[in-house]
Length: 287
Length: 122
Ligand SMILES: Nc1nc2c(ncn2[C@@H]2O[C@H](COP(=O)(O)OP(=O)(O)OP(=O)(O)O)[C@@H](O)[C@H]2O)c(=O)[nH]1
Ligand SMILES: [Mg+2]
Ligand SMILES: [Zn+2]
Ligand SMILES: [Zn+2]
Ligand SMILES: [Zn+2]
Ligand SMILES: [Zn+2]
Image 1 (tube, rainbow over the protein chains, first blue to last red):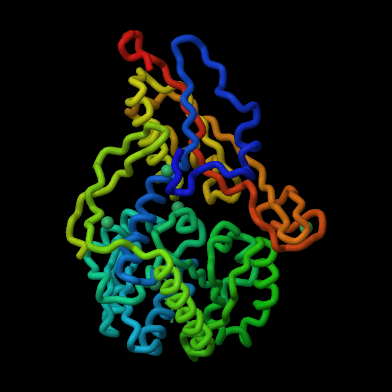
Image 2 (image 1 turned 30 degrees about the vertical axis):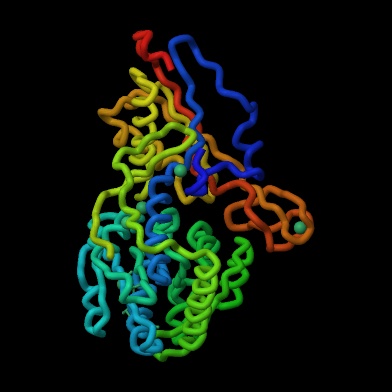
């Protein structure tokens, strides 16, 4: 089994997963092999590897998710304009077909890497890893990843971020956490965006959204924010600063060893059930 | 649909197991998943013929087992069944719970057809 990617069976679910215990009986000439591996473990290993890249350079990585048009790019633009200029920002943009969002970011003089996802409905850890090789992480303090606008697919793919932020815009309605529990359960912060519209679209009740979040056992803080009138920005910045401090403290206690190049993974993906090498490309330009 | 890309990584795992065990073919693939995994069982099944075409597992049966959602209450400690958007404690009604089961997405086992070559016995 795999100890590094979180695809292990836990004490809690063990009895549910293996009712009868032992291997299934098999006909002669056949062999049943027990695997117990997450279907996403290759993605999850690459995500962990990305996280090491970020940690090596003391960079906070924040994954922004929402339905299409909930205001992710507008939030990034407002953040770039108002966040303390000592905090150096880069953006990785996942856009279906265009460079529009990346160009909006670049207009503010901020580095933006475009991942052309084509018809993909989510970013995955491999795409981020590719992007990281076009980004000198030593030049930045925060990398924002703008995921593909979609409340379903991105939730399943760890990218190596430290925090997930999900935007729920007022025009979408306050019941989205109940309809997309998987997405909202992965959120470390829920942002009610376009809050300037609350007085107009008054059937959106912030308290309802919070109640739906409680129903899915979410402990994520909820902030209301408008990129238009800039209300709520101080709360957002407080949260970001708190994450930076938390990372710093964590990395002081768990230092990342510098100096050695950790890109010598083997290409093959062996599955010996006790240990496994993880597949990795052999790009070599990350310092 | 992300089910196709997940199915493709499933096939990569199945193929490497078959190779490692020098199997002639794969007869069945068992996947266990919970309703909170973010993957729809039916969409995964639909993706299977596409992802497995031309592989050693193209004739294998895909068996998907659905696991129940279970939560453990952080307040009273009891465990109960739950639904995807009501993960609250059945005993005391508190919302502060921890998921025990229901978000799994796991390749459980594969059944292989072995070649007759005695050297290849595992
Ligand atoms: N009223 C109001 N409109 C907003 C706000 N933020 C964004 N918008 C508008 O919402 C629309 C979509 O905003 P974007 O920032 O492009 O949204 P997005 O989430 O990046 O969209 P995709 O990348 O296409 O998924 C634009 O017309 C914005 O002007 C806000 O705070 N208030
Ligand atoms: Mg955008
Ligand atoms: Zn693994
Ligand atoms: Zn790397
Ligand atoms: Zn999808
Ligand atoms: Zn309870």
